[in-house]
Amino acid sequence: MEPTTVTPLRLLIADKSKVYMSALESLLKLNQNITIIEFCDSSFSLMNILKKSEVDILIFDPIIFNENSTSEIQNIKNQFPHLKIIALSIQESSNMRADMLKAGVFEHLSKWDDAKKIISLINYN
Image 1 (cartoon, rainbow, N blue to C red):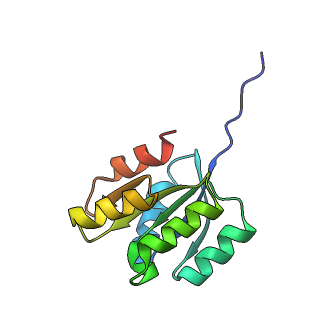
Image 2 (cartoon, rainbow, N blue to C red):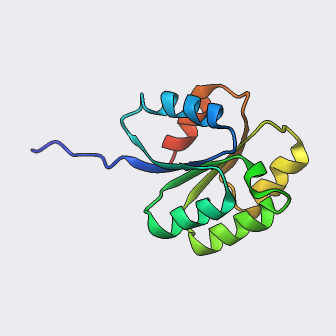
């Protein structure tokens, strides 16, 4: 019996903080089940990448969409229904979390959450 090969999850990270993106990249590189496709820091770049690349998971900070985060997420989910979307935000408002989940986000986490929680959510099917 031949060993099965697992296709790594293709991840896109969208955040205006280059420091946070770099830290997240360092953490995720340790997981062989994850391939980071690209990074971006604007909603325009995000949409272009989603249209041209195969992405399984989007990790983003809602601030990237300015004031329109929930409508932008709904738009993304309509265009890419298979996409798992995880919001990572410094804002811990329960209203924001509820709005993000209602818009189609798989989970809304705080940037202060434990790294194991982020990896667990990425790998959760």
